[in-house]
Image (tube, rainbow, N blue to C red):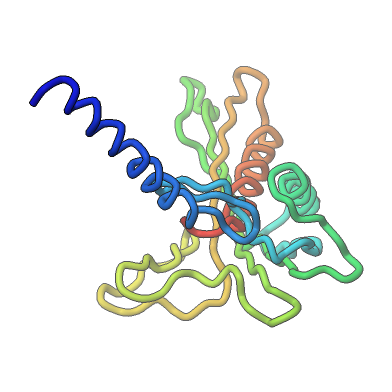
Amino acid sequence: MSTASIRRSAIFLAPSALLAIVALLLPSCESAGNFTLLGYTTRPNYRCDIHSVRVPIFKNNAYRDATRQGIEMDLTQAIIRQIEAKTPFKVNTESPDTELTGSIDYLNKGVLNRNQRNLPRETETTLACSVKWVDLRTGENLSRPAHGPGSLPPPALPGSPPAVPGTPPPPSDKVAVFSLGHFIPEIGQSSTTAYKQNVDNLAIQIVSMMEEPW
């Protein structure tokens, strides 16, 4: 084939290739103004039909001492800060679209290792809570765990007896979330340091669960 014939073929194929690219791009434009191309999208990670959420103070069902007082307030405030910083939702107590409720079910502190004087060198704290996110307009449970083949059961609370193999997990309309914290007394840290880690990590996890599934 001569060079002139190749050039004529390229000129003839160029418009066809351009039309094919345009045809691929046109259906990628969504009604909300977002674009989807080759699996990538500009659509936000959160539901666009939800605009507000109410977050009542979490209940505290865990054992409380002088160092654990008010941790439910700290967790609630941390969740509100995460919602306002990471999501398009507005925290509203008057007429919200949804409500996020929860309770602290477990708070424990355990020594990981000790020094030569048998004093704690490193200590770990565990904070567990259960949360439920409900659409107040429809009653839909937005935090319902996934069901069906391949879905994972909700994890058991720390310290609870292990489930009998082969038995289904008990039904629950809430989702269990856990976090770990650490502190080393020898460098000036205390249980307050670890509890703040627990609270901040839990708030991040809970707000991340408000994203739409991929």
